Image (cartoon, helix red, strand yellow):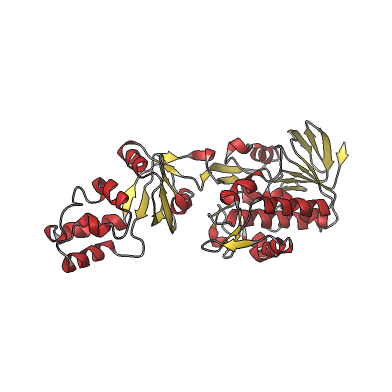
Length: 396
């Protein structure tokens, strides 16, 4: 049996962060990863440039049954701490928008950084390692296709169900239940919406067109880009709202964010009554959107002069632009979801150490836990912060 002080299950962002930190603090650490290489989700994130953190990271950007749970870890290891690590490795980065930090070159820079830190700390990483069974109550035994491993501490960093083609499984949830933990219902988060019928046909027509918008679904409003796709709606505004949306509910869109569309149309009517409605609206959004969404927002009035439209009708059109409510048929699901909502219930975890309150020596970190960040680097920061919290507790 291969023995160590810590076994980390999962070689993703959270697992590698925990491993390098525990190793640097003197622990013998082994990382068991089922895929053929570490950090696969890191590599594909941010369009290949990895949005590794956010300058404005705070607990308000996270979703959990217990909104206070993430506070301790985020305070202990902040975005500024991770930025210092990135700068230590001379990785060039830039702020894209809204505090989102990306690698200038490639996501590979972050994976290389984590690998080097693990190597310097003496961490052993084993890939293509099929985990067959976990048993014991400290020391634990992990049976794999490449041998038996034992350690007094196990860190579960197996991620969620998002993007199964990259190896995502429910292993972490099954292991949590095995040791008496509750697992909250999971669903896809930060995922595009899909539509059926006439709306689906309209989205197909507009596929590739984007515009600024504010999207709201059973929660906060997100004013960012909205992208029409061949299946429905994507872009940051839609992805953010998907984490709050529930099947059967409406998605509320403001297609002229920051402006009162009704007032704007009324002003245009007074100033230029001969102008056509469609032409005026096209000053604020792509003409293709104006033409395609006409049946839902202003009937067939695109070619009608403003002076020929009653004030009441014009007001209704403006309100529709600012408050367009549509019902998605579904989301694209885990296939394209960036994160998994729900997961291991935090009630039985220590917010300071990530250790199980039920089974000493068992830790849960990263996406497997019921803590999900907004789009924009927050989920990576949770991975870094929760990984450090567990590593420091194990090494204390």
